[in-house]
Length: 196
Image (cartoon, rainbow, N blue to C red):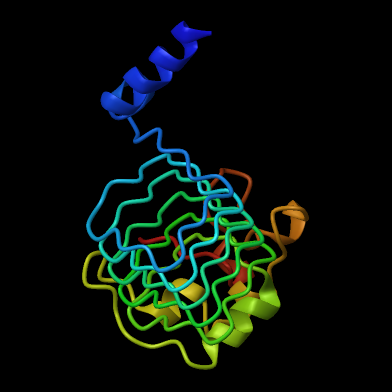
């Protein structure tokens, strides 16, 4: 068994397997009131971690696993949480000011009372009731991506909110443009946006 332990130590020392992540393992860890500012947790594992009232501001979490983690009143301001799996995560009263959550999966997560000023949720998977609740107070523009929080959530866009979820793909995309027999947009349908 020593060779496995040495390999894991080597991966951690070299920033993960193939040098592409932190390989940090915080699964079920007690990280309450921990301070980790501007650190790299790319592809790290925080599954079921207790992160209550911690400070992870400015940290990079690209591709990290945060499912079932408890992050009540945790500070993620300015953090890069893009491409993270945050399924069933507790983010009540968390600070997500100016955070980037592009393509993150937040299904069945609770963001009640979270501060989301300037957060970018573009292409994130969020349950519709949660998205509607966030839209009630979403504001600001993300300083990194330049995307408005309301636009990234699809607030006020009845067509976008009308679509389904990834589990119902027929409802998850806008209607296809109708084409004429030559393969060009049929301007008679009213759905065509072809430039002339």
